[in-house]
Picture 1 (cartoon, rainbow, N blue to C red):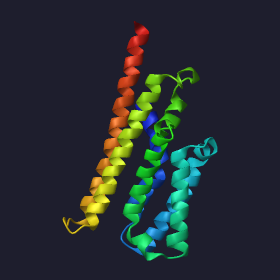
Picture 2: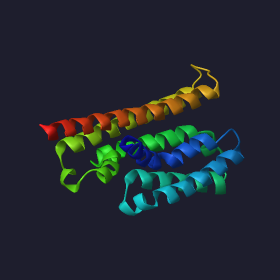
Picture 3: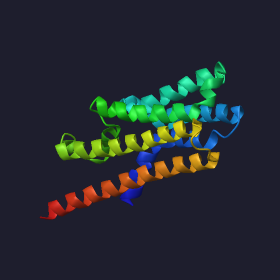
Picture 4: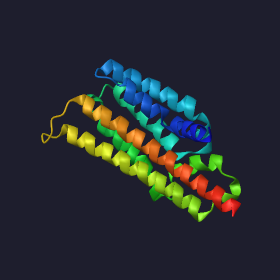
Length: 193
């Protein structure tokens, strides 16, 4: 039950991105609608995290504000055309940025479930850095797939890239869940000894 709760907290941070992936479709209208829904989801699901200054949540909100201005209001076609590349690059960039500034996004979320006494524990911080690094690498693979999609080297149907994006997200969620479970079991075992 605890794993499901922790997974739910993690998923809340990605709701706008998941909605965007699922709703953006193949038309300008579906893209515009997906941007608005994702922007609203950033505000609704991320309100508390915005107040807490979570970098991932602020980056998400800023990205969808950018999209709303350049796609929905100004109708800049190249932004719409390269949206998958832009969105994957933005998400990967946010994740890499959190590592570079020494505040891995996973650390901000993990602190919700850990007593304040453990917040500065080097092992805890290292674990959060590892999880953030996994996500940043996975999103960098998504950027690579977006670049590959535009190249003349490979010509795969669109559903392949969509399915690959879902697999990347599922891989991140699986690694995160298994890593957290393993660390929790280690702590419980150490506490018994």
